[in-house]
Image (cartoon, rainbow, N blue to C red):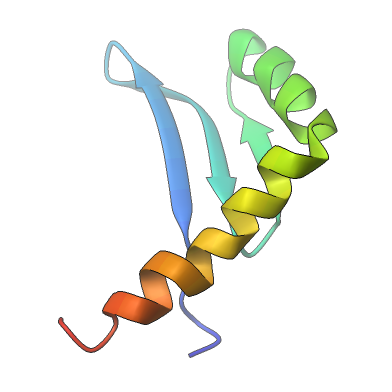
Length: 66
């Protein structure tokens, strides 16, 4: 179960500009706009904690369905 990860991607015009993965535990920006937002989002510890909890709440809960 350690190979499961929660991914939250943000796209605009088919271009991914930011992504959160539970393996890294932080947002990563892929464009100038994404880097700026990722830095801002990573400073919000309550947001990061909530997204880390999504792996257990969403992914591990639904693993038996697929």
